[in-house]
Amino acid sequence: MCGILGSIDRTLQPALLASLHHRGPDGHDLKAIQVAGRKVWLGHTRLAILDLSPAGHQPMQSRDGRWWVSFNGELYNHFDLRRSLSGPFRGHSDTETLVELLAAQGMESTLAQLNGMFAFAALDCRAGQLYLARDPFGIKPLYYAREGRSLIFASEVRVLRLLGLGNQISDAGLRQFLSLRYVPSPATLWAGIQRLPPGQILRVDLESGGQESRRYIAPVRERFQGSFEEAVGIYRERLGAAIARQLLSDVPVGVLLSGGVDSALVAAMARDAGAEPPCFTVGFGQEHAECEIEDAAHTARVLGLPFHSVQVTPEGLREALPAIVRAVEEPLGTTSILPMWYLVARARASVTVVLTGQGTDEPWGGYFRYQVGLLSRALPFPWLFQPAAWLARFLPGLPDAAERGLRTLAQSDAAKQILAAAALFSPSERCWLLGDAEDGGAEAQIRAWLRWVAQAGTLSPVESMMRLDARMNLADDLLLYGDKIAMAHSLEARVPMLDLDLVQFVESLPIEYRIRWRQGKVLHKRMAEGYLPREIVHRPKKGFQVPFGAWSRTRWKPWVEQHLLEGLEDILERRGVERLWRQHSKARPDRSRQIFSLLMLALWYQDQSHANG
Image (cartoon, rainbow, N blue to C red; front, top):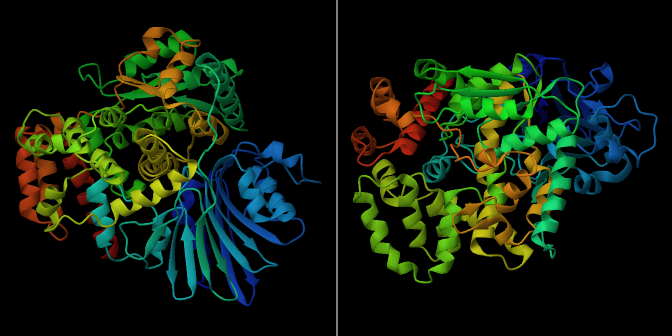
């Protein structure tokens, strides 16, 4: 896990590497390489995980001199890939495997074989081509911008901002954020800066300056034909193999443990693989229903694993918010960002790598919106729900998820259903904030992914939604903040539930093996019962939530109100913000999801304005 940066033609100074020091405190370097009459800069900051020796130093050149690579991430199958290569090897890093695989087989063949999380730049000196690539699920981020014929790229936006790029807010990006609570790739909130989409490769021809970007991934087409019990056995083997692969490390490995089944299963199978990973949990105290410390401690006791917890206070979280926004770089509307900051800081005090349970809910159908998707399939007349969806806005006690569910049921078009299910603000609410309801291209992004999903053949609407979520909002929301917060503390966070071989199997399963009416993660939980007591497997989901609604109406109220009403005047209609804040203050209805997102936007905008100033 590292930081990468580079450019075509634009001169980069070694001091720029300091902006990514948190991603790689164990070493750094910057190379200028002359290719096809142009100068290509490749930079790297290293967090040493595999091969702690100088043999893992980057940027790294292939033995034949043709390829240079600056790599961020982990390739979990790199020892298997090495068997097809001839030595001698300098060390045992996965970066060396990657650069020698490129030298032996080229980019297309190499990408098809990689199982891991990664974002990398690869320079083919002989062909005069520069490639940028992001892993199939977008676990690792990569940003880039064009400046004339120059291209500049980096693991984090701060590098591009230091070079004077992205000084204006993207109107389309802002509208997508208000529609989805995040900005899906390739868009960002900075005009002129893009985020490489998951499973995509960007190629630049150095001689002509031509550029092309395309997806190198294909949707799973295979359909599992075996019985439910046969699938349980295969899933056990695949997940066990994934966790064993992701335990590979030359530094200590732990587990981020919540009170739920997903991280508990990861911890249990890691123990069965021969590890004794320490477990780390964060909470707010037992007076808060959202606190998971007691549940996680019980799981750790059952598994016989070391357990460490950190308890945070509302004041501590509020004080950390500006630093969190600065680290994440984008105003994501997920409250779990807050405790995650303290959780990874505590974990880093003991280990350098953690396994997490992230990435389970999307392929296994763990969210409420998938239940709504099942219901919509059973109810063939969406227009019947249109009056109810309209009236839902005036029912003060209706939960946000239920309101979105009604709006989803009122839609017959697949893309509009998905947008309604995920929507941060409804079209009418966007009118309050922006003066019109335009979504900035959010629906178009959903349609583009649906066209990709359709290559798999006929899928049910809910299965299409699950596949889209696993590559769109997971990549640019949950995984994005997970990477940024972990790397702010120089911690590598791995997600074995998104192992490529594993997800390919899960997505081949019949939908009823994964989700049924009022049941999510069906087969996943059945398999987990072989490792964990039923009270852990079927413990009610808390979802790593924060009592933001209560705090923002009480102890945080003056602070939140000030930032909302004074911090967004330049980009949103004040009257619209005031209207939402009045609703939330009275909890008629509760607008916690929307208010937190606006607060993050206000803090982000304040930080950007300060940087520009």
